[in-house]
Every structure is written in structure tokens, then in C-alpha cells.
Amino acid sequence: MHVIRHTFKPGDPGALRGPEDLTEERVLAYTREQDISPRRFPSDPPRYWVILVADGQRRSRLWGTFENHGEVTADRTESSRFFDLRPSGFLAPLNDRLVVEWDTPRSWHRSAASASAARMPVLEIADRDKVQFPGFDGVLLSYLQLREMVEDPRYADWRIALSEVQGIYLITDSTNGKQYVGKADGAERILGRWTAYARDGHGGNVALRELALVSAAGEGTRTKTDHARHFVFSLLRVFGPSTPSSEVNSAESHYKAALMTRTFGLNRN
Image 1: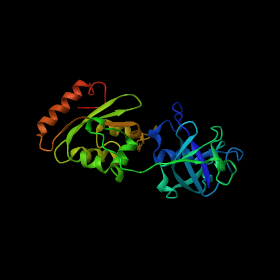
Image 2: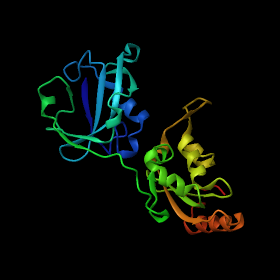
Image 3: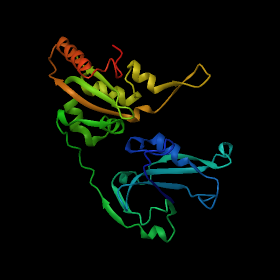
Image 4: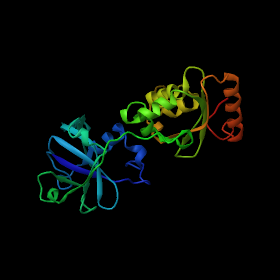
């Protein structure tokens, strides 16, 4: 095993800038690229790469594990090597729960068999108790948390609550503060609408879809981005299941006007 500790670098677009980047896609892309020099990273690293994320001064929390299937030599550049890493279930029950001490920030990777690995005492193994629903006024989810909410058993209370109400919701792009006001009415409810966002990152909305799909320079094709990781979801107002659609529509128009999301935000109508 090889142990790697990632830290957030908010000003570096090529690095992990914050918790919103802790998606499997982003962590994989960031981790698979390593320095060409064997002095900076092993020339033949072991099968399992255990990924930790800095969680305080000397605290590091387990993010997950990749299985290394070797270097992809065709991708090698003058400065970098790229490895064929695949998500692994190894240690999965401890993901986000296991916290260890990392003795020095100057060292960001080490062999699990090294003497330095012996200086990584376990500080905490957190319980995976259910996540308490905070009430509709307290809902605030990053995109990563939204995806967990619609799938993770710990969020069962959230799904029950959000499946029972219609409402007006707000999506904020944390990179620039632009906002989108949307509604979930009829039988769809908030949970149904947000599940669509968790699935594709845009839920079919025009402006959000444009952020999720960008044209490659000089080409007519469009490629999918992971811009949705910057979105933050909250609720502006909720309605009971029997509330007429006309009342929900009126509230949606009000919030679009009040927050000026047609003029300065991401609403197109």
C-alpha cells in the first residue's frame, strides 16, 4: 500500500481547491498524475493507493482507495507520469470515518511499510449515524452532499421530508455567486427534482446545461464538464402537497424578480 495525503489549494485550478472537488472524478484525475522523477514518487508504486485529505493541522481523514493497474506509458510527458487507477472497495467501510495523525505536512506520501507510516496513530473512527434533517430552513447542500443525500441510507429522514413537499429552491454557483431559482411542483416534489440534478448536474435547465457542456475549441462537438461540483442547493419556500400549481408558479416568479436572477443570474425565463 501507498498512502497519499491531499490538501486543498484554493488558488490552484489544477489542484483540489475545496470540499466541492472531492468527487471521484476529480480526485482520480488529480491523483493519477505524478512527477516523472522516481525521487519524488516511486517508479513502481504498489497496488493500493490509500487517499487521505487534510482535516486540520495534523489530522487527515480517509477519502477512499484506488487500485493501481500500472503506468499508462502512452500518456507520459516530459514532466509527468499517469497511472491507471480504479476505485477500490478496500477500506470502504472507513471512508470519511477514519482520522489519523499526519506528522509533517512537508511529506505528502509514504509507503505503508515505511517507518514514517508507524507514526500515523488513529485519532478517530467516527460513527456513521444517520444525518439529522435540519428543517426546511436549514437545508444547505453542496453538489457532492446532494448526491449523497439522494443515495446514502444515512439521509433517509431528508428524503422522506423532501419527498412530501413542493417548493421553490435556489442553486448558487460558488465560483461567481450567480443564482438559479427553480420550482418543484405537482407529483415531482423537491426530492424528485433534486434527484435529477444529482444524476446529471443540470436537471435539464438551459443555463445550467450550458455550464455542464462546453464546446471544444475549434470543434463542433460538446464535452461534459464537472462544473456542477460548484453548485450549492438550498430552499427558499416550501408548500404542502395539495397547494395549487398557480401558487407555486407565483412564488417562483416573485423570487426570480426579488433576486434578479433573470438579469444577473442563471434564469432564462
